Image (cartoon, rainbow, N blue to C red; front, side, top):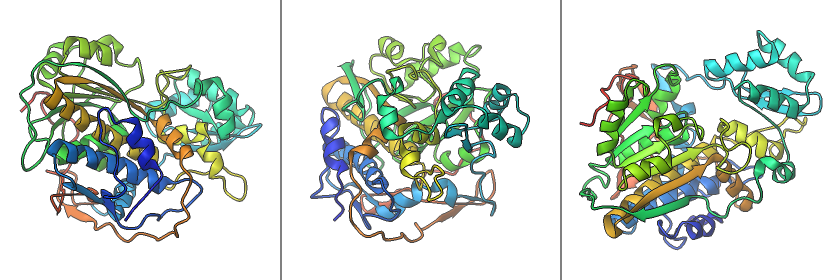
Length: 446
């Protein structure tokens, strides 16, 4: 039996929409601790996946319908590292994404996307990695954070947990709820849960990028949802990131400036909208939780951001690694030489992705049974807060085995990939198809 301190924390916060996690009948089986380290990353992974499983069980009125192996949870939380594309290892962090020394400490940058790399260089007057390093050594960590952020780049000073909580950026004590719900009455909706795959027929319009949102929509697709991901033409997703998280979905490119009619047609028939850009980024298109719920009362809206909706960074861009640096995680994981460290996997992203799954299924169940729909808000910083609220257990570390990697042909060649962590009705839950060519789908419902 797997037990972890997150069960009461997460279950108690979301019991209006989601059932509490049962530690007597755990939805996960296998080793309890496999990465080790000062924070209970395994507990966060198990609890977030367990909450997604509990939401599906609740939808189906069947305990234990969806279960997860901790070995496969470990695999899917590290899916990009397991991925092979015609034998090629995917690209990880770019050279200018990482920790850099400053005059008084450290700063972490994120420059995987070309436009973020250009803004980082422009902010520092640099042309390459050496120039970036030299420029940062002349600045304090907080000055570097400010200068890069003001230029639209991505960076965060490495803070202790106390420094983060005491700073205005934290905007007060961490919120009590991991997932924040806002509910209102919903007119009648025809959708009903499927018998083979529970989300069959549920239309999900996916405006998310990078890891958390795409991991969520990949899982919703495995559960039967019709997922259509939309990307802007001027900012394509990183190819390896698309391949890792693109299983089971259709993928389209749409200019929202010229495609307002197409967007309206999509929204008219959607059941769920996933929003994963920075707060305020899509306001001009009416893609805010409030505007969407006012225009489409039955719609389920899931809003994902990095920093939450309070404080001066509410509208700031952010990534898992950057949130780790700002909130004290990188400090807790410092190496013996004093250099900041990181979680063994990008657990804030992945856990939040499974939280999105749980929220989506929970709201779909509430809409079907009780005639209410609403908005769920999640953020990476709330996942970081959860990690600091539960102590790492004393269980011995048991390195996990190969998660049972699978192989498939795809548009991009042969892919070796980590399977879904779930069994549905005792059978491994598979993705319906490999990633399609990026942007190749028509932006219409089937």
